[in-house]
Length: 400
Image 1 (cartoon, one colour):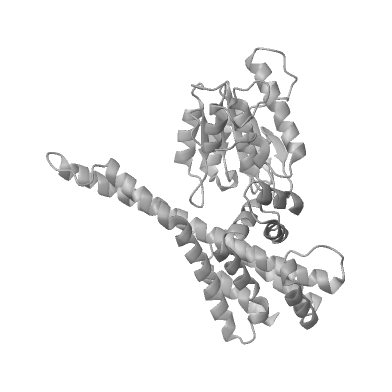
Image 2: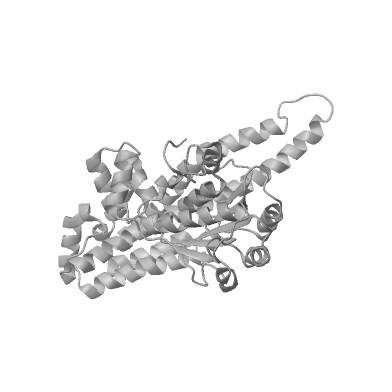
């Protein structure tokens, strides 16, 4: 798995790591029955930060530190506890990573029941909820009851973009210790890509400079040629809208790009899940009970396909949102160039294209285009049909 510390993947967050290490030390003293300063270790944490800042990575490292069996270096990354936590297989660490557009109340109630049990192999039972901003109202209420009256030796780790009420309810936030992460610097990202992922230094620096501070995006751009091609096709849109007919071509291309990426990302996993389910349900068996087993398998298969469809929808939305973030960065760069500000561009490798756009458009026109991209992101969050939202956006990008 990993040869280094569990904290090694928490990139560019030295202050946050110091806080978490201190909490791990306090938790160890608490387990031994020693005196612990109030607030040094608490039962609920909220990790916030922009996309790519490593919220869930930091939460997993913290979980590994709590379960680590190395007393001298908690979060060693080498012991069985650390390795199983980081691999997602530790018996006392439950990770909820929503594959659909939301986390249901049924899923949360099941999770709360599991959290009430005492740890079996480690010192703590840890519940890590990625994208907790996707909790439905019912799921949020179910979680609140557990956070208000936490079982002993249970720790809740929530991850969300911010502690704003739109992301996390005020009541849940008030019962959590908030740990804010920042966008990691490009230099730290490039170092990780070069030293840990073996990426050629020049490409690592390029990927770090254009990823918007998103470590996962930087890794994909550095290692996946198709990801690089998709990004380039998106950034060719602003100056490619010469005729109004181009609006519909570009909009369809953007949506199709997101659909293709979602299929590619999930295709292999979907087939693997289906085969595993069929095997588990006795596919191909003969003899008594075969008919009823087949009916049960068909029902389970339909439920699996429903979950896979939900996962594909989310993957498509996430892929489309990433393209919109790239577009927003382009128009922001145009405003930077027009204003003469001496600040780094989001897309330095498209500097000549940005400069050309800055010559052709007024600052007001560039700002209207930027606002159109942001409005499209908001429309997609409200579940407007993607093609409708994107066509409306691209029409504004064309007209300015």
